Structure formats: C-alpha cells, structure tokens
Amino acid sequence: RSRGRKMDELWIVSVPWREKTAEEAYQELVRNLNAYATCTKFSIPDMKVGTMDSLVSMSDQLAKMDPSIEIVVRKLARFIYDILSPDERPKFKENLVIGPKKVPVDVYVNSFQWDNARYPSKQSIPNILDMINKITSDIEAEFKRKTTTYNNLKSQMQAIERRERGNLMTKSLSHVVVEQDVVIGSEYMQTLLVVVPRSLYKDWERKYEKLTEMVVPRSSKKIAEDAEHGLWSVTLFRKMVEEFKTKARED
Image (cartoon, rainbow, N blue to C red; front, side, top):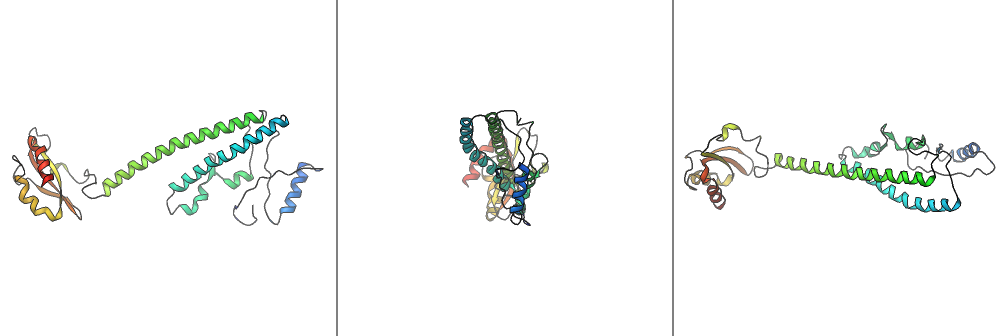
C-alpha cells in the first residue's frame, strides 16, 4: 500500500527465505520497501502440502476458482453500489466491509487471521479448497435469492409510488375518495367514479343523466382534479352499471 495515502492496491506476496528465517526475510522486505509501501504480515498456518502432483493439480484448480470467486465478489460490490443513492455513492468504498464486525477491506487484510474453526489447517489443502468453493456457492445462491426479493419489493414500491404520485388516471384513489362520496350498503344503488378530461366537464354535466336509464338526477359531483382531469361521482341502479360504463367510454 502506498505510504501516506488511502488504499490504492493490496499485494499479497510470497518471499523466499533462502538462508534467513521467516522473520529476517520479512524485516528485509520492510527495509527495502519502506519508502514505497507499508508492509504487514499475512499469517497463514502450516498446511498439509502433499505430493508434487497434488500441488500441481491444486494449482490448476486455484486458477479456475480465483476468477469465479472474484466474479461473485464483484457482483456483491456492484449491487451495493447500485442500491446506494447518488449522494451516498462517493462513500461507496466505506460500505465495502467484511464480516459481522464490518471491518474495512484494508484493515481486514492487514490484520488477517486464519479462521481455523471454519477451515481447519489439519485438513488437506484439497479439502480446504472444497470448503471455500462450497461457501462461495452458498454466498452466491443467497445473494441471488436476496437480489430477487429486493428487486420484487423495489418493483412493488415503484408501482405504489406511481399510483400515489400519478394523475387521476393511474394513481390510487384510496386517499382521495371518502365514505361520503359514495353510496354504501345499498342493494339496488351503486356509485361509479369517472375520470373526465377538464375540457369535457360541461359535456359530462350535460350528458351523464342521459347515458342510460335509471341514473339518479343531479347525483354527479366533482370529488377531485389534477392538471388534466377531474374525478366525478355518479349514482345509478346496479343493473345499469355495465351499460353505463360502455356508453361513457363510447361517448
């Protein structure tokens, strides 16, 4: 990591010991890179290495696993970025944290501790790789489920907002119409709500009583209006409702 700056890049490097101890090799690296980067130990336990053939096989497996895991991590990061508001996006990196304690990425790497409870070092390396693969697959499956749930809820909320914020043709009328605006509990009578363009108010008032028979005279009143339409009520006998709807649409 560049000195005196926020995290730009994190490199994990393996340094040969040669004739030195591990600590001596680390201290030499620190001295040589002191002007360019901050070095910290990345501690991993001793593993069951196995044969050279098994190491070659694991190297091939890791070459396939690495890009697959990176894709999953990038999907998670992209999703976090997408759900942040424009005002929050400049602080996107602050939302990239690891684990239940929400540790920042650079802090996590610089203070890394092997999770021996989850990945016992006594297990063979192929077994540990299988564990990592399974956990990654589980994370991806859970991410897909939660993404689907989030997108469904988002679509529902957007539909509600459109109904609430739209014009009288599309918005919900639950907060517009009150009990006094309609006939309730009548076996024979029913109140209809009609959206009428503002330019046709006079036509509506002149014609609605004549669209069908059994319309209650002078029953229509304007309940609400927006920039383009008005919401009008009209009361008539139930048996004429469908015919009234048809005639109103035609007219």
